[in-house]
Image (cartoon, rainbow, N blue to C red):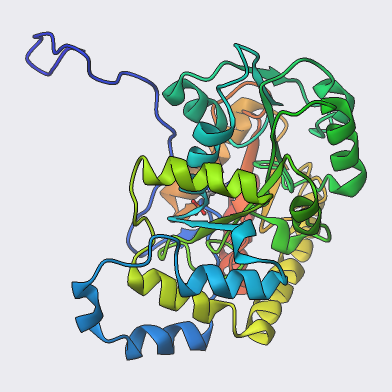
Length: 359
Ligand code: PMP
Protein backbone atom coordinates (compact mmCIF):
# COMPACT_ATOMS: atom_id res chain seq x y z
CA UNK A 1 0.00 0.00 0.00
CA UNK A 2 1.22 3.53 -0.78
CA UNK A 3 1.47 5.96 2.11
CA UNK A 4 0.80 9.69 1.85
CA UNK A 5 4.39 10.27 0.76
CA UNK A 6 4.10 7.89 -2.19
CA UNK A 7 6.42 5.23 -0.81
CA UNK A 8 5.41 1.57 -0.74
CA UNK A 9 4.58 -0.18 2.54
CA UNK A 10 4.58 -3.91 2.16
CA UNK A 11 1.77 -6.17 3.40
CA UNK A 12 -0.83 -3.71 4.73
CA UNK A 13 -4.50 -4.65 4.50
CA UNK A 14 -6.03 -2.91 1.50
CA UNK A 15 -9.59 -4.28 1.51
CA UNK A 16 -12.64 -2.06 1.32
CA UNK A 17 -14.13 -1.70 4.83
CA UNK A 18 -17.79 -1.39 5.81
CA UNK A 19 -18.98 2.22 5.85
CA UNK A 20 -21.20 2.96 8.85
CA UNK A 21 -23.53 5.96 9.09
CA UNK A 22 -22.26 9.31 10.33
CA UNK A 23 -22.22 9.91 14.09
CA UNK A 24 -22.41 13.66 14.75
CA UNK A 25 -22.58 14.40 18.48
CA UNK A 26 -25.70 16.53 18.66
CA UNK A 27 -27.81 19.25 17.06
CA UNK A 28 -29.41 17.10 14.37
CA UNK A 29 -32.40 14.83 13.97
CA UNK A 30 -30.58 11.54 13.70
CA UNK A 31 -32.46 8.97 11.64
CA UNK A 32 -29.46 7.37 9.90
CA UNK A 33 -28.17 4.42 11.97
CA UNK A 34 -31.29 2.69 13.30
CA UNK A 35 -30.57 3.64 16.89
CA UNK A 36 -33.40 3.70 19.40
CA UNK A 37 -34.66 7.24 20.18
CA UNK A 38 -35.65 6.29 23.75
CA UNK A 39 -33.22 5.86 26.65
CA UNK A 40 -32.23 2.44 27.98
CA UNK A 41 -34.41 0.89 30.72
CA UNK A 42 -34.20 2.60 34.15
CA UNK A 43 -32.66 -0.60 35.55
CA UNK A 44 -29.73 -0.24 33.16
CA UNK A 45 -29.09 3.35 34.23
CA UNK A 46 -29.24 2.25 37.88
CA UNK A 47 -26.83 -0.65 37.27
CA UNK A 48 -24.38 1.79 35.65
CA UNK A 49 -24.75 4.35 38.49
CA UNK A 50 -24.28 1.66 41.15
CA UNK A 51 -21.31 0.04 39.43
CA UNK A 52 -18.26 -0.12 41.67
CA UNK A 53 -15.39 1.06 39.47
CA UNK A 54 -12.89 -0.78 41.65
CA UNK A 55 -14.06 -3.98 39.99
CA UNK A 56 -12.36 -2.83 36.79
CA UNK A 57 -9.00 -3.91 38.24
CA UNK A 58 -9.80 -7.47 37.19
CA UNK A 59 -10.40 -8.94 33.74
CA UNK A 60 -14.02 -9.83 32.97
CA UNK A 61 -15.31 -13.41 32.64
CA UNK A 62 -14.28 -14.70 29.24
CA UNK A 63 -17.81 -15.84 28.32
CA UNK A 64 -19.71 -12.69 29.27
CA UNK A 65 -20.51 -14.01 32.77
CA UNK A 66 -23.78 -12.65 34.16
CA UNK A 67 -24.87 -11.42 30.73
CA UNK A 68 -24.61 -14.88 29.19
CA UNK A 69 -26.48 -16.37 32.15
CA UNK A 70 -29.20 -13.72 31.94
CA UNK A 71 -29.63 -14.34 28.20
CA UNK A 72 -29.90 -18.10 28.71
CA UNK A 73 -32.55 -17.55 31.43
CA UNK A 74 -34.40 -14.99 29.28
CA UNK A 75 -34.71 -17.41 26.36
CA UNK A 76 -35.16 -20.48 28.60
CA UNK A 77 -32.13 -22.26 27.15
CA UNK A 78 -28.78 -23.54 28.44
CA UNK A 79 -25.91 -21.07 28.58
CA UNK A 80 -23.93 -23.50 26.41
CA UNK A 81 -26.31 -22.48 23.60
CA UNK A 82 -25.47 -18.78 23.99
CA UNK A 83 -22.42 -16.81 22.82
CA UNK A 84 -21.96 -13.18 23.87
CA UNK A 85 -19.88 -10.57 22.04
CA UNK A 86 -19.05 -6.92 21.62
CA UNK A 87 -22.03 -6.01 19.43
CA UNK A 88 -23.54 -8.38 16.88
CA UNK A 89 -21.11 -7.14 14.24
CA UNK A 90 -18.34 -8.79 16.20
CA UNK A 91 -20.45 -11.91 16.83
CA UNK A 92 -21.20 -12.14 13.11
CA UNK A 93 -17.56 -11.59 12.15
CA UNK A 94 -16.46 -14.37 14.50
CA UNK A 95 -19.28 -16.58 13.21
CA UNK A 96 -18.13 -16.08 9.62
CA UNK A 97 -14.63 -17.05 10.67
CA UNK A 98 -15.77 -20.00 12.80
CA UNK A 99 -18.45 -21.46 10.51
CA UNK A 100 -17.49 -20.55 6.94
CA UNK A 101 -14.42 -20.86 4.78
CA UNK A 102 -13.83 -24.52 5.36
CA UNK A 103 -16.18 -25.62 2.57
CA UNK A 104 -13.48 -26.65 0.06
CA UNK A 105 -13.92 -23.49 -1.96
CA UNK A 106 -17.71 -23.60 -2.04
CA UNK A 107 -19.15 -20.09 -1.77
CA UNK A 108 -21.12 -18.66 1.12
CA UNK A 109 -24.50 -17.49 -0.19
CA UNK A 110 -26.46 -14.36 0.68
CA UNK A 111 -28.84 -11.96 -1.06
CA UNK A 112 -27.53 -9.18 -3.29
CA UNK A 113 -29.58 -6.64 -1.32
CA UNK A 114 -28.74 -7.33 2.31
CA UNK A 115 -26.53 -6.09 5.16
CA UNK A 116 -23.46 -4.75 3.39
CA UNK A 117 -21.07 -6.02 6.06
CA UNK A 118 -21.42 -9.65 4.83
CA UNK A 119 -19.21 -9.25 1.73
CA UNK A 120 -16.72 -7.20 3.78
CA UNK A 121 -16.23 -10.05 6.28
CA UNK A 122 -15.96 -12.61 3.46
CA UNK A 123 -13.23 -10.60 1.79
CA UNK A 124 -11.49 -9.90 5.10
CA UNK A 125 -11.35 -13.61 5.96
CA UNK A 126 -10.76 -14.82 2.39
CA UNK A 127 -14.10 -16.65 2.25
CA UNK A 128 -15.54 -17.14 -1.26
CA UNK A 129 -19.12 -15.86 -1.61
CA UNK A 130 -21.91 -15.49 -4.15
CA UNK A 131 -24.85 -13.12 -4.01
CA UNK A 132 -28.33 -14.21 -5.04
CA UNK A 133 -30.62 -11.59 -6.58
CA UNK A 134 -33.68 -10.70 -4.54
CA UNK A 135 -36.94 -10.19 -6.43
CA UNK A 136 -38.18 -6.76 -7.51
CA UNK A 137 -40.12 -6.73 -4.24
CA UNK A 138 -36.74 -7.08 -2.40
CA UNK A 139 -37.70 -10.45 -0.89
CA UNK A 140 -34.99 -13.11 -1.14
CA UNK A 141 -36.20 -16.39 -2.70
CA UNK A 142 -35.69 -19.48 -0.55
CA UNK A 143 -35.25 -21.80 -3.53
CA UNK A 144 -32.37 -19.67 -4.87
CA UNK A 145 -30.25 -21.09 -2.02
CA UNK A 146 -30.57 -24.61 -3.46
CA UNK A 147 -26.99 -24.95 -4.63
CA UNK A 148 -23.64 -26.19 -3.37
CA UNK A 149 -22.48 -23.80 -0.69
CA UNK A 150 -20.04 -23.27 2.13
CA UNK A 151 -22.71 -21.57 4.26
CA UNK A 152 -25.75 -19.31 4.04
CA UNK A 153 -26.54 -15.96 5.64
CA UNK A 154 -30.02 -14.48 5.78
CA UNK A 155 -31.10 -11.28 7.46
CA UNK A 156 -34.66 -11.38 8.84
CA UNK A 157 -36.09 -8.76 8.98
CA UNK A 158 -33.96 -7.68 6.06
CA UNK A 159 -31.49 -4.83 5.97
CA UNK A 160 -31.82 -2.29 4.50
CA UNK A 161 -35.32 -3.30 3.40
CA UNK A 162 -37.04 -3.91 6.76
CA UNK A 163 -38.98 -6.79 5.19
CA UNK A 164 -39.98 -9.80 7.29
CA UNK A 165 -39.42 -13.26 5.84
CA UNK A 166 -40.68 -15.54 8.61
CA UNK A 167 -40.84 -19.24 9.29
CA UNK A 168 -41.93 -20.56 5.87
CA UNK A 169 -38.96 -18.77 4.27
CA UNK A 170 -36.56 -20.21 6.85
CA UNK A 171 -37.98 -23.70 6.27
CA UNK A 172 -37.46 -23.16 2.55
CA UNK A 173 -33.84 -22.06 3.03
CA UNK A 174 -33.06 -25.00 5.32
CA UNK A 175 -34.67 -27.40 2.84
CA UNK A 176 -32.81 -25.79 -0.07
CA UNK A 177 -29.54 -26.04 1.83
CA UNK A 178 -30.09 -29.68 2.63
CA UNK A 179 -26.47 -30.20 3.56
CA UNK A 180 -24.37 -29.72 6.61
CA UNK A 181 -23.26 -26.14 6.03
CA UNK A 182 -24.17 -23.53 8.61
CA UNK A 183 -27.12 -21.17 8.10
CA UNK A 184 -26.76 -17.87 9.97
CA UNK A 185 -29.90 -15.82 10.56
CA UNK A 186 -29.10 -12.21 11.44
CA UNK A 187 -31.99 -11.07 13.65
CA UNK A 188 -30.74 -7.57 14.47
CA UNK A 189 -34.30 -6.23 13.98
CA UNK A 190 -36.38 -9.27 14.99
CA UNK A 191 -37.72 -7.60 18.14
CA UNK A 192 -39.80 -5.35 15.85
CA UNK A 193 -41.19 -8.35 13.94
CA UNK A 194 -43.47 -11.30 14.72
CA UNK A 195 -41.09 -14.19 14.10
CA UNK A 196 -37.79 -15.31 15.60
CA UNK A 197 -35.76 -18.40 14.72
CA UNK A 198 -34.23 -18.61 18.20
CA UNK A 199 -36.27 -21.61 19.39
CA UNK A 200 -35.43 -23.39 16.13
CA UNK A 201 -31.71 -22.66 16.53
CA UNK A 202 -31.40 -24.61 19.76
CA UNK A 203 -32.96 -27.69 18.13
CA UNK A 204 -31.15 -27.59 14.76
CA UNK A 205 -27.48 -28.61 14.49
CA UNK A 206 -26.53 -26.06 11.83
CA UNK A 207 -28.63 -22.95 12.50
CA UNK A 208 -27.08 -19.96 14.25
CA UNK A 209 -29.17 -16.90 15.14
CA UNK A 210 -27.54 -13.56 16.00
CA UNK A 211 -29.15 -10.73 17.95
CA UNK A 212 -28.26 -7.27 19.24
CA UNK A 213 -29.15 -4.93 22.12
CA UNK A 214 -28.39 -1.94 19.88
CA UNK A 215 -31.88 -1.46 18.47
CA UNK A 216 -34.78 -2.66 20.60
CA UNK A 217 -32.94 -2.26 23.92
CA UNK A 218 -31.53 1.24 23.25
CA UNK A 219 -27.95 0.13 23.92
CA UNK A 220 -26.01 0.74 20.69
CA UNK A 221 -23.32 2.49 22.71
CA UNK A 222 -22.87 -0.39 25.15
CA UNK A 223 -22.06 -2.91 22.39
CA UNK A 224 -23.91 -6.13 23.15
CA UNK A 225 -24.57 -8.84 20.62
CA UNK A 226 -25.15 -12.55 21.01
CA UNK A 227 -25.70 -15.76 19.13
CA UNK A 228 -27.90 -18.75 19.90
CA UNK A 229 -27.22 -22.17 18.44
CA UNK A 230 -26.16 -25.75 18.89
CA UNK A 231 -23.42 -26.27 21.47
CA UNK A 232 -20.96 -27.25 18.73
CA UNK A 233 -21.51 -23.96 16.91
CA UNK A 234 -21.13 -22.03 20.17
CA UNK A 235 -17.92 -23.95 20.92
CA UNK A 236 -16.54 -23.06 17.47
CA UNK A 237 -17.45 -19.39 18.03
CA UNK A 238 -15.75 -19.48 21.42
CA UNK A 239 -12.60 -20.96 19.89
CA UNK A 240 -12.62 -18.20 17.25
CA UNK A 241 -13.06 -15.56 19.97
CA UNK A 242 -10.26 -17.03 22.06
CA UNK A 243 -8.00 -16.90 19.01
CA UNK A 244 -8.70 -13.18 18.69
CA UNK A 245 -9.62 -11.54 22.03
CA UNK A 246 -10.47 -13.55 25.16
CA UNK A 247 -12.41 -10.74 26.86
CA UNK A 248 -14.54 -8.87 24.30
CA UNK A 249 -17.35 -8.01 26.76
CA UNK A 250 -16.31 -5.60 29.51
CA UNK A 251 -17.39 -6.02 33.15
CA UNK A 252 -19.55 -2.89 32.85
CA UNK A 253 -21.19 -4.20 29.67
CA UNK A 254 -21.98 -7.56 31.27
CA UNK A 255 -23.62 -5.96 34.31
CA UNK A 256 -25.60 -3.30 32.39
CA UNK A 257 -26.53 -5.79 29.66
CA UNK A 258 -27.90 -8.27 32.19
CA UNK A 259 -29.94 -5.45 33.76
CA UNK A 260 -31.44 -4.68 30.33
CA UNK A 261 -33.14 -8.08 30.33
CA UNK A 262 -34.92 -7.45 33.62
CA UNK A 263 -37.30 -4.67 32.67
CA UNK A 264 -39.49 -6.47 30.14
CA UNK A 265 -42.44 -4.07 30.47
CA UNK A 266 -40.27 -1.03 29.66
CA UNK A 267 -38.73 -2.76 26.68
CA UNK A 268 -42.10 -3.90 25.32
CA UNK A 269 -43.47 -0.37 25.72
CA UNK A 270 -40.52 1.14 23.79
CA UNK A 271 -40.82 -1.42 20.99
CA UNK A 272 -44.59 -0.79 20.85
CA UNK A 273 -44.11 2.99 20.56
CA UNK A 274 -41.55 2.58 17.77
CA UNK A 275 -43.82 0.24 15.81
CA UNK A 276 -46.70 2.69 16.14
CA UNK A 277 -44.55 5.63 14.98
CA UNK A 278 -43.15 3.47 12.14
CA UNK A 279 -46.57 2.53 10.81
CA UNK A 280 -47.87 6.08 10.90
CA UNK A 281 -44.66 7.40 9.26
CA UNK A 282 -45.04 4.78 6.50
CA UNK A 283 -48.59 6.00 5.83
CA UNK A 284 -47.47 9.63 5.74
CA UNK A 285 -44.62 8.83 3.35
CA UNK A 286 -46.99 6.94 1.05
CA UNK A 287 -49.34 9.94 1.06
CA UNK A 288 -46.41 12.05 -0.13
CA UNK A 289 -45.85 9.63 -3.02
CA UNK A 290 -42.98 7.53 -1.67
CA UNK A 291 -42.96 3.78 -2.26
CA UNK A 292 -42.69 2.26 1.21
CA UNK A 293 -42.76 -1.51 1.69
CA UNK A 294 -44.25 -2.92 4.91
CA UNK A 295 -41.50 -2.70 7.54
CA UNK A 296 -40.99 -5.16 10.39
CA UNK A 297 -38.01 -3.25 11.76
CA UNK A 298 -37.27 0.16 13.27
CA UNK A 299 -36.73 1.86 9.90
CA UNK A 300 -38.44 2.47 6.58
CA UNK A 301 -37.04 1.92 3.11
CA UNK A 302 -38.56 4.72 1.07
CA UNK A 303 -38.46 4.60 -2.71
CA UNK A 304 -38.05 8.09 -4.19
CA UNK A 305 -38.64 7.30 -7.87
CA UNK A 306 -35.06 7.78 -9.06
CA UNK A 307 -31.48 7.83 -7.79
CA UNK A 308 -31.14 11.52 -8.63
CA UNK A 309 -34.20 12.37 -6.56
CA UNK A 310 -33.19 10.11 -3.64
CA UNK A 311 -29.76 11.71 -3.48
CA UNK A 312 -31.20 15.21 -3.76
CA UNK A 313 -33.65 14.58 -0.91
CA UNK A 314 -30.90 13.02 1.20
CA UNK A 315 -28.67 16.06 0.70
CA UNK A 316 -31.46 18.54 1.26
CA UNK A 317 -32.49 16.83 4.50
CA UNK A 318 -28.89 16.74 5.68
CA UNK A 319 -28.37 20.41 4.91
CA UNK A 320 -31.43 21.04 7.09
CA UNK A 321 -30.21 18.96 10.00
CA UNK A 322 -32.10 15.70 9.35
CA UNK A 323 -29.79 12.74 8.76
CA UNK A 324 -31.14 9.66 6.98
CA UNK A 325 -29.17 6.97 5.14
CA UNK A 326 -28.50 6.89 1.40
CA UNK A 327 -26.76 3.89 -0.21
CA UNK A 328 -25.12 4.67 -3.53
CA UNK A 329 -25.42 1.05 -4.63
CA UNK A 330 -27.03 -0.86 -7.51
CA UNK A 331 -30.75 -1.67 -7.03
CA UNK A 332 -31.19 0.56 -3.95
CA UNK A 333 -29.75 3.92 -5.04
CA UNK A 334 -33.27 5.30 -5.59
CA UNK A 335 -34.22 4.78 -1.94
CA UNK A 336 -33.64 6.27 1.49
CA UNK A 337 -33.45 4.30 4.71
CA UNK A 338 -35.15 6.27 7.44
CA UNK A 339 -34.75 5.18 11.08
CA UNK A 340 -37.77 5.68 13.32
CA UNK A 341 -37.31 8.46 15.85
CA UNK A 342 -39.68 9.95 18.39
CA UNK A 343 -42.95 11.31 16.92
CA UNK A 344 -41.65 14.88 17.24
CA UNK A 345 -38.48 13.97 15.31
CA UNK A 346 -40.60 12.42 12.57
CA UNK A 347 -42.60 15.66 12.47
CA UNK A 348 -39.37 17.56 11.75
CA UNK A 349 -38.54 15.05 9.00
CA UNK A 350 -41.97 15.52 7.43
CA UNK A 351 -41.79 19.30 7.67
CA UNK A 352 -38.44 19.23 5.81
CA UNK A 353 -39.71 16.70 3.27
CA UNK A 354 -42.85 18.72 2.58
CA UNK A 355 -40.66 21.82 2.25
CA UNK A 356 -38.54 20.03 -0.33
CA UNK A 357 -41.51 18.67 -2.26
CA UNK A 358 -43.05 22.15 -2.42
CA UNK A 359 -39.94 23.57 -4.13
N1 PMP B 1 -26.92 -6.78 11.52
C1 PMP B 1 -27.61 -5.83 10.89
C2 PMP B 1 -28.54 -6.24 9.80
C3 PMP B 1 -27.45 -4.49 11.22
O1 PMP B 1 -28.13 -3.54 10.56
C4 PMP B 1 -26.56 -4.13 12.26
C5 PMP B 1 -26.38 -2.68 12.65
N2 PMP B 1 -25.59 -1.96 11.75
C6 PMP B 1 -25.85 -5.15 12.89
C7 PMP B 1 -26.07 -6.46 12.52
C8 PMP B 1 -24.84 -4.87 13.95
O2 PMP B 1 -25.36 -4.30 15.08
P1 PMP B 1 -24.50 -4.17 16.42
O3 PMP B 1 -23.06 -4.46 16.09
O4 PMP B 1 -24.73 -2.80 16.91
O5 PMP B 1 -25.04 -5.23 17.34
